[in-house]
Each structure stands twice: as C-alpha cells, then as structure tokens.
Image 1 (cartoon, rainbow, N blue to C red):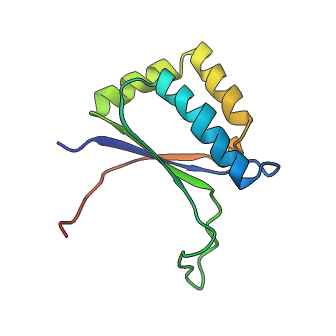
Image 2 (image 1 turned 90 degrees about the horizontal axis):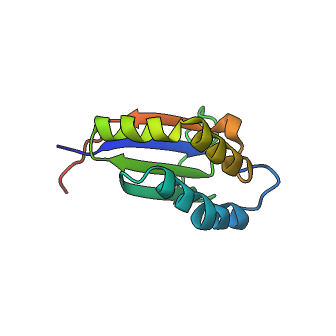
Length: 119
C-alpha cells in the first residue's frame, strides 16, 4: 500500500530573501514540524528554481517558493498527526513560527493520490 501524501505550496514573506527563507525552513521550521508530527515517514522540501520551468502561453506564472511533500503510513497516521498539530498549544507554536518566514495567506495544502510509472 502506498504512503498517504500531503503536498503544500508555500510562499515566502515578501521581506525575506530566498537564502534566508531556505535557511529558516531547514534549520528552524523543519525541525519543529518533525517535533510536532513525529509519525511522518517522509518529509521533502522542494525549492522552486527561478529558471528551467515551462510557462504555457495563457497560464499565470507559478508564484510559490517551495513545494513540500509530507508522507504518512496511512490516513489514520495523518489524522492522528493533524489532531496533535491542531491542539491549541501546538497550533499556536506552528502559526507563530510560520509567521516568521511564510506568507501564510498563500499557503495551500492538498492530499494527493500518487501514481508512479515504471521507467
């Protein structure tokens, strides 16, 4: 059975440099996520590159700075992690930390079903 995956699109605060965004995420925020959600089985932070993407003629520019993938054993593990994270004390800690480097109004989180092709 495939892991249960959540993807987040994240936008840096306008007053933060790319280097500072990545530094804060890697050294402060990622450890906090691991602390508050210990049942994660995979945690990938993908930092969007300014060049190399394909923009289709009518599509708006992609305006996010990171794409995060968090994997759980199954839906029950995700639900358990979310319940712990959303407790008042933990939710406040997470929000306070995110305010330091994210434009939280732009955050988008989706649950996905992953399909992989054999190569």
